[in-house]
Each structure stands twice: as C-alpha cells, then as structure tokens.
Image 1 (cartoon, rainbow, N blue to C red):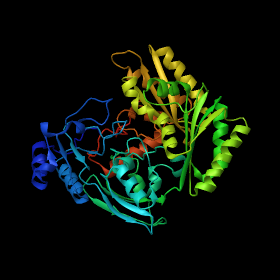
Image 2: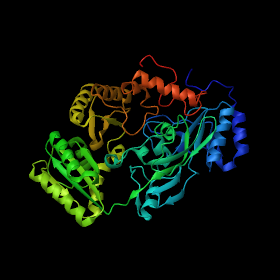
Image 3: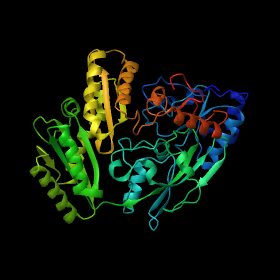
Image 4: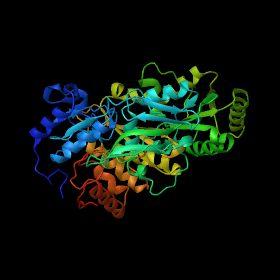
Length: 479
C-alpha cells in the first residue's frame, strides 16, 4: 500500500462541489482564495496549495466534511494554529485541509470538578486566561501560546515549560471528542478523574498528529492557581553541578518545582549578546546557566522555603552566582533569556532546530559530541544547546553561518545519528510529522513501527487522513 490515497476512485471536482453544497460559502475556500497561512505548516518545507480549505464551526461539521472527502477518496489534512515544527499539518497536494479555527471557545468551566471543556480551535492563551479568571491554572504553557490551538497541542502531545511538575499535554486530558477517518463522531467528554471503564480510547489520538482522528473537543483538568511564583537565574561551573542542583531542587522544593531550564554558554551568548534587548541577570562567565522556578500556594511560607533552598545551594558550593526574583517582573525577565530562542531566526538567520530527549546524565557529553561532529563536517558550523533539562528535553539550534542554503539534511543526519548513539529520542515534544519521519526508526523498534502501521490500517484503511505523516504504511528498507 502506498502513502497516496488510491483505494477509491478520486473525484476532486465532485468532492469540492458537495462540500460547497453542505457548507456556507465562507467555510470553503479554493484556489487563490486560500490564505497563505494554510499553505505551510513549517518554513522548513515548501508551500503547497491544497485542493480546498474547509472551516467547520461544529463537531458535526468536521464529521460531515470528513465523510464527504472519504466518500470521494480525497485525502484530508487537519490544521490547527500552524505553529508546529515538524510539518504535521503541512498540506498535501490534492487534499482538503480541515481547519478548526472557526470552532473556538470555552464551553464550560466546572469549578466543582476542576475541569474546563474547550473547542479544538481555541488558542491556548484563551484557555489559560479563562482558567486564571476563575482562580485556576492550566498547566500547559509554550511560547506559541497566543496562536497555537488546543486541538493541535493535544494531537502532538505538546510539552512546554512545566512538564517537570505537571507532565505532558495528555496528562491534563480527562475527556476527548474526535472524528474518525470514516466520518464517525465519537464523543467521550468524561469529567471524572477516575474512570477505568474499558480501553482508554483517548490515548490513541493524543500525540497521533491527526493521522488516526481529528480532535474536536476536550475536557481538561484544572489545577489551583499558584499563590506565588519565585525564580532564580543561577550560574554554575560544571555539568556535574547542574545535575547536583537538579537533585537538590527536587528534594528541597518537591512538587513545587515547576521549571528547571539549562542554557549552555554558546546559547547564553546568543541570547544575551546577539539578541538585542535581553539583559543578562547575572554577570561573568559560567559553565552553565540554570533557571529554576517554583510555584507555591503561600507567599510567606513558600517564599521563605525558596530562599532557604537557594542559600543552602550556595553553602553546598553548587551555585557560583545567582539572581533571585523579587517580583513577577523579575520572573518574566529571567524567562526572557530562555525565550530568546524565538528571536534566533532574525539574528542568526535560517537555521535547523531540533527537539530531542536524552537521559539527563548524558546531555553534556552528547552536546560535546554533537558540537564536534557538526564542526568537523559542516562548514562554518554554529550550534547552541539549551532546554528543559529537568524533564530530559534538549533543544539544539544549528546552522552553517553564511550559507545561502542551509545543509539541512546533512545537519539532521549528524544530530540524529548522535542521538541514536546516546540512546535518546529524536522527538521530545514536537512530534514527527514529515521532517522527522526518516529518522523514526532510530527511536522506535521494528515491532513498534509495525504496530503503528497496524493501528493506522485499522482506523484508516484508505490512508486518507493526514497521509504520509509520522509513519509509512509500507515498511521501508531502513526499518
């Protein structure tokens, strides 16, 4: 079986005609009417103009659009906020894009159950704001919060800044509604924390990147809004001290530890020197820079606990220097050093970005090996390292400085081969999509890939839903 939908007689014109018959004119766009944003899910892939973009405003509308496309043998690619980095929502030529942007909003916030029911097209920031106004907290947070949509966050099982405390996106999902490739709408909007009745079906769709179904609504778990937030930007002299500091934070702060971000010196220079407007909170050169954040419930009690922990780390010789927040403005200022990576496209130019997972103890050795291999094989190589080290997630930005076209494949081959050697994963939180698919067998066994293909065939025998993404239906020679 190939990756292109070829099980049925494809009639593109009749498919579009039926879609226009079933949906308002504004909900179906074709040709030059398709917005530029729908042509590309990542700048690393060339733009593709799909057959049409359909924008339903209800779960039933998503199901109807899927049913029509399946009946005509036309492939469908679901799209969310289009902030992905792996090409999971990238258009496929001759396919219909189903965008959830018109199906947005909060349907219910249940304070007694501590849940919020949301539509898939709702921006993450809107959900965060609604929870905050009601005295609650949404654990998921990432840089694209203002434009990413919760359906896309869940379909990629997004990670973000606070996984060390709250877990990945799937950890906050209690109930889910989704549309299957044949157009069946399955509603399982469970609000109970304990519900062990049969298979946990929602897990099939959380992280499947829209290849098994299209998420339409979700019930998310809420947490109490933090009563205080404290942070410290620390300079330490060795990676051994980074690991010691992480252990001390886990012991001393316990479940209040909400973030543990580590920046290597190459990243620190790019963030605080190359990026304009970012002030370094601490002076001098250090081996590593660590942002530690704690979210507590009581300002007096938990604030004192945080200060006592910092003082103990100094006494134990783990921290060489540190800036400790005195206000939320300070916390935001510390985070700007970590979020400066969003500006690298402007100050460094075109580059390759990587999101990998490794055992914490191996990260510095990996960075040394990867940096050396890139320097040896890529002309004028620059690579910088940073990430959510507390949860085993390392980010890399790599490029050939001054190159008119980045040698993306050569850089990826080096990075992912090194990840494979160190026993890591090629994707910690950004999914597989198109860009990482050639390397998936570095991380997954032949048996795991075979099971993925079996699930895909069972739910989507015509290979019509997001075809070609994540895993091929036919086993390749490399696997």
